[in-house]
Structure formats: C-alpha cells, structure tokens
Image 1 (cartoon, helix red, strand yellow):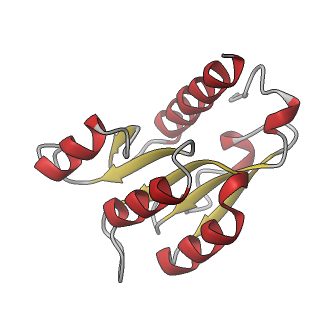
Image 2 (spheres, one colour):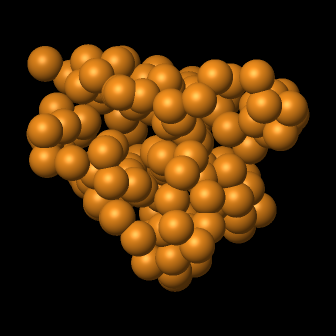
Length: 143
C-alpha cells in the first residue's frame, strides 16, 4: 500500500492534481495515490479547468501529474505554466512517446518537469513516482 511517510503538518491540505484521461481514470484510485491525512487528489480531464483551479489554489498544490497529449493545452505547456506560478510544485509528465524530445529534455534539466512516466502507466509505477516526488518535497521542507 502506498503511503506518504513523514509528511509534515505544514504539508496538510496539499493537493495532488491529476490531469488527463488515462491517468485520471478510476482504475488508479485516490487512496492508492494518497493515504496520508491532509493530502487530497483532484482529477481533471480538461486541462483548462485544471489550470484555472491551479491558478486559484497554486499554493495548495504539492504535485501535478499531466498527460502530454490533451486538447487545447498540452502537458508540457501546462507544466510550464504551473512552474511559472508555483516553482515549488513538483511535476510529472506522462507520455506514450519516447523521451527524446529536445523540449522535454530541456524542461527536465530546468526542473520544469520533475518526473517522466511512459504510458500505459501502471498503477504501481504511478504510486512509486508520487512517493518519490513527495519525498523530495519532504527533504526540501526539512532544510
């Protein structure tokens, strides 16, 4: 079972945003993604709605997980905007393409994209990546 060990009270009421059709599917349940009190998972199939929610609640987001291919705004654009608004939010991009895109590599080097997952994303892979990103947040908060 997934857990967010050691999440501090300052992290309570933080949001994990999941944006996209496949990664937003119910087969990856919220309780598998987050079992620590005070962390909640919000799912969006519409990236524009996700971005609007993020703009209003930017300080509450710990992590955004986004699919690359979406209508209107793609995952790279979404994560770039998220990082411009809240540089401390962690970000994960999911894609069914290889990671050889120069833009994706550049954004990974610049820490705009903090993690990459190849689709189809298996539930255990997503859980491991979420745990990794939350662990990084915890280590930063301890400094």
